[in-house]
Image 1: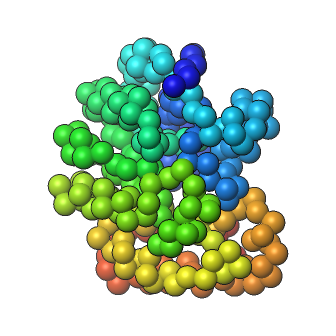
Image 2: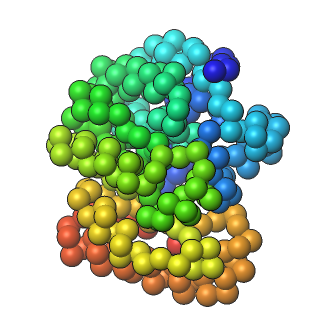
Length: 252
């Protein structure tokens, strides 16, 4: 696969529930069509030329060397590092990305830095050999495979994602699910209770609306819809003692 070089890697996220993050890949083969905020920003600032260009990921080949320089300097400031915010650490079909992600997590863990993982790919079982402080998560916005193939065409099937997450949960790891960006009924008719039942084993659920899409605002009852769905998530989590977080501007 193609590679690029960078000068820096670890940075503060600026996201309300995050700390530090790293993005050791440019682009994402999953090709999400929500639209993807990371793609929109990459195109706006000239990092990629087109959607097809975005779907051809470039691995930062000097990732580990950068971490060797930055970890000693930032170690005392970092509570956790998330992989990743603008790409995916376990992109389907790219063993080079998987191996680099595992090596980066191992290096951070060796420095006693916790890692929080989020993927639309498959969480490798090798993660069960890493720090017990790590937190492993997947994105899951539906259980309908037709919708996944339409909106997340290069991602892992939903049930495969769930099985990989469950395997790490059963090994005693903290697991979580990001139910974001959750679609409105004009995009897909579904019952959020079914998704919640499927992820009821996890330790935390994050819920958020879809943004940056004209199709969402075209659904005139979207505010009422997201208020109702968020209330269902909160009630579900409280009843089962699952931690939860409702993203900003989801409830109005």
